[in-house]
Amino acid sequence: MIQSIAAFIASTISIFSGELSGEIVDHRLTGKLYDIQGFSVHDGPGIRTTVYLKGCPLRCRWCHSPESMRSADELSWFDARCIGIGKCGRCLDACPAGALSAGDPEHVLVVAEGKETEKITKVKIDRERCTVCLACAAACPAKALAPSGYEMSVGDVYERVARDKMFFSGEGGATISGGEPMMQFDFTYALAKKFAEENITVAIDTTGFAPGESYEKIAPYTDLFLYDLKHMDSEKHRKLCGVPNEPILENARRIARAGGKFQIRIPVIPKLNDSGENLRAAARFAVSLGDAALEIQLLPYHKLGASKYTRIGRDYPLRNVEAPSDEIMREYLELMQSFGLNAKIH
Ligand code: SF4
Ligand code: SF4
Image 1 (cartoon, rainbow, N blue to C red):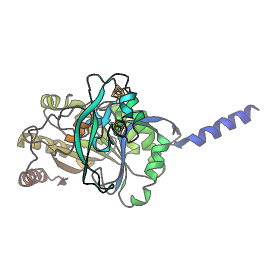
Image 2 (cartoon, helix red, strand yellow):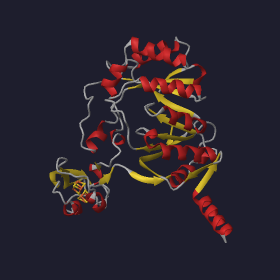
Image 3 (cartoon, rainbow, N blue to C red):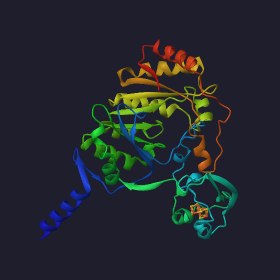
Image 4 (cartoon, helix red, strand yellow):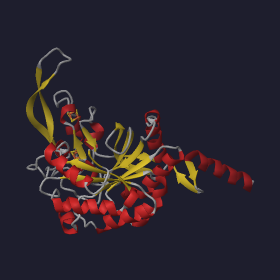
């Protein structure tokens, strides 16, 4: 009887769990995501499916994923999806805090009904009053109001990513990104192990600002770390991103010693981190990592994330910064290449 109970427990665990190097991975473990995107060509080599996790310890002023910063839910507003309070208005009744009201009437295109435009009134959100109870999101049939994150299990994320496996041929695979995925370490670790177990290559897109032991533990299941060098001066790094850079640089050395490989990424933000002095210091640091630094990517600043700030009711901090020119990016590229680095503009 005792044996049969033990066998039952073992078989139950095997349904939900995988085993790699003798360690059980619980596939029911959940993490908080804000997106999963297939066919990504910007998150590591080849065609990849990227899993975006919520929560980040940094507050980079140029962040283009503000919805990833906070671990807690926020209320997202997708203006174009709202069908108007004349036809719907369910959110107004659902809100217990009186945080929703009628906005200004506006003209919208209604092609399907053969009309050119129609005047509709959408809702507006008083963010001061909103308690983020998300009752309106539950009531909204159009998903115009929606939570900024959702829970998923390791097993369910794996199943979703595995649907894209046929496109990973060659060097593609899964990227675990954020936010900072190491903030949900148990989930990220279990996911990386599951991908490794199923022969899906793993890239982890990290700020480097997490406990060093965590990087050593996950390195055997990680083919590539996408690793930002945002500023080489720690005080300036703290002013721009909210944290000093020493732990980030130390973790990079630690990952290199553990056999990890890097795609080093340098966001180029005019006047904030694009001085020759800073780029040369970043190049010297990348050189010091030796063969571990497979590629250096220069990422020119862009404003594509600005509308996401509006969506969650926050101000975009870098309104007055313009993208660097192609010419200046080529100069920076040549500077990095002059250190013998495999540098590219991304
Ligand atoms: S999240 Fe809650 S408090 Fe905020 S607008 Fe929606 S229903 Fe109102
Ligand atoms: S419930 Fe959604 S679609 Fe309906 S009025 Fe509110 S935001 Fe618009």
